[in-house]
Amino acid sequence: MSVPVFVIPTDHLVRLGLKITDSLHYQLQPHELVRHALRRKEGVLNDTGALVIKTGAFTGRSPKDRYIVKDEITAGTIHWNDFNQPLDAPHFDKIFKSITQYLNALPELFVRDCCVCAHPQYRLNLRVINELASTNLFAYNMFLRPTEEELETFRPDWQILSAPGLQLDAALCGTRSSNAVVISFRLKLILIAGTGYTGETKKSIFTILNYLLPREKKVLSMHCSANRGPRGDTAIFFGLSGTGKTTLSADPRRQLIGDDEHGWTADSIFNFEGGCYAKCINLKEDKEPEIYRSIRPGALVENVRFYPETDKINFEDGSITENTRVSYPLSYISNALEPSLGPTPKNIFFLTCDAYGVLPPISRLTPGQAMYQFISGYTAKVAGTETGITEPKPTFSACFGAPFLPLHPGQYAQLLGAKMKQHNVKVWMINTGWSGGVFGKGSRISLAYTRAMITAALEGALDAVEYTPHPVFGMAMPLSCPGVPAGLLNPRNTWPDPGAYDRMADEVAGWFLKNFGKYADGVDAEILSAAPTPKK
Image (cartoon, helix red, strand yellow):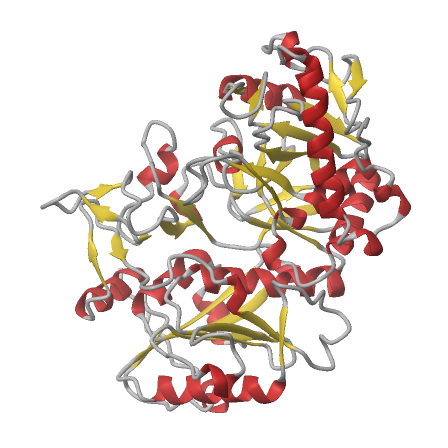
């Protein structure tokens, strides 16, 4: 089959101030990008044919170096905080000039037209302009790929300029350091300088969708995974790192809609992306076969090491970073649903790894409780999830994705609550953490039991059982669940000392209340009334 040859769209590039030369590589196929990456010594191949790269000084996002231009559009709409840092227009102009001058001086550039949002009504066209062939391959893997016919009339809505090799003059550019990610909603531009971490590209697009879709389309944007069952029912899974989101949403009996970013319209769920960006640390074929088998030609693997004197990846080696990653097209997943669309969800699962043994293994939430827990976004980091963590550490991330939310979390929660009520969606909290005591004293809740609880919820087996309210957090705990010992369902009953449980529950509730204080002025009484009530 012949490889299509695409004409470089020069008009928009000229308007950006970029020179048009013969060394602009446009819309290359994955095998061509891999060939260029190998020629440029950006990476090497592993034994299964995937491209393996190192992203340099940055092996993860740098949230303190992400800025949004403060102008007439954003001044009164952005929820300015540590994640949404303002940058004025003159400093943006200086960064833009630095990037275009830098890119124009390079011997070659890689340009790709792509899009996001699997629902055609909400499609957003992107043009990605890269210094590196490997970053352009990442864009191919992660975003939706227009057809040849669509490219004939393609016009970008947003453009991304990526220059990992550029070190900014922080004093001149008004930034904290020599690297920065800057978003301009007025110019519809994203500038990435000084960092080779590919995830910055993905999450900058997620950030703009988290602004545009709720405000302009009344679509709830979500940091979650989603799948569809054999009866056509959609389920959504929210959860921070270490809660089991990837594992629990990857069910061979259900089709994967997407693993990370979705939108909820009036009547459907849709994936934003065209690929997956999965963690690789401690990856094993028997535990996560779909991810393991996706490491093949076309996939891009980041910051792993090989076994000595081989080209075989040692997935247990986290010496570069624990955040080892692989990107690949969604089509690499055998049970992926394409196009990545599903009907309105019937069940939503909030996953938390409570290392303090307080929250029940499964509970059902009222709309008010769901909005409160959604804004809270609670889990606990335990040893092994992050460098330097040796004891449990409570973590709250609003809407399970605080770094990517330009709007006040209350706005997303209100949308969630309205959709829950309109469609009578059941919301469950699943604790994949500890039971019978805190981390180090109790024991981790069995994955088999967690799967049984989720299956019971999905199949309606918990609809007619009796429930009892949690004495502090208020959520409804089932008294029975198929395939799960009844004694496990009420966490207080699993502790050898119920008084110690009560004290721990009060302490955890206090953390919730303290965290929620920063959002209280932007939510309504229904949400506030769902706060936990410590007994002492």
